[in-house]
Length: 352
Image (cartoon, rainbow, N blue to C red; front, side):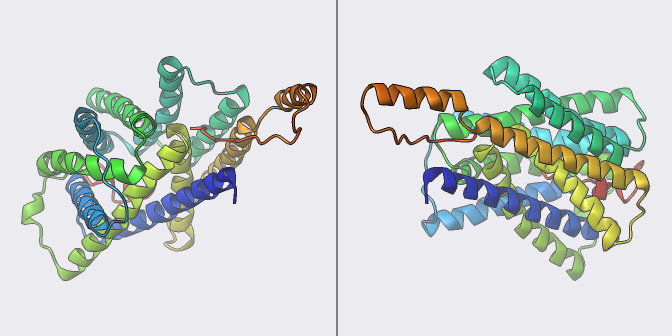
């Protein structure tokens, strides 16, 4: 198997793992929050990251991967920024309506494209931008219901967008700059993410839910779902770093909207959640946008016929072997669970 084929199979595997694990944890968290009443999302996320770090530490001890230390300041800054972005997204969900929160998530893609264009000189073709527009339009139709604005919620959403974009871009650039794998980066950064969320989580959850996470009644059923959620989160966190490292932050966001559509469809088919023609139309448009995005990115990553023809002619002129080998690398690009503050409804976690 060639290196290009191995890369493509690895990318497909990373994307599949991300979709399956993310949809699974949404289902688990819906049962935990909506059915069992455990609405402490930020604290739960800190437990996710702590379990992820412990699991990776065991994997390191068993020599499944090699520890590769690098710039400690970069690791600490990256971990803290990731923790802050998760907390801000949860706050944004708490202080805004469902529709405005979905608009916040939609804004992450154009913001990421803008940042990568300005600071990394990355070029996105007109066709790729067109596909992203179709995707965002479809997700907007399917998920955005109301746009109630308030000053505090708008400020929190703005900071959530910026920190999330920067954190995801850093995930990609750090792996390439320091030549570390997604596992190595996650292992070193997860303690910082877990620590900042573990400290602020109980206060943040108390602000949004008017409940104390330490006073909650932990029944055996609640504990089972918490443990299950933490175990699934290991796969979610690992696949997130893996996808961004193998593709790009933009592709990861596109994948995130695919997960949203799958969760909506799952809720309709298995949980009999309310569904309208608007949801169906939006999902269909979003799927078209995702297919177009994948097609255009794959085509843009292939060598141009003109370049190949030129190389072939040059080889003939120098009487070299005309059979040339073109190595084609493709670089085209937390699940913070929603919570239940005094003003939101229990079904928000299906749409987050």
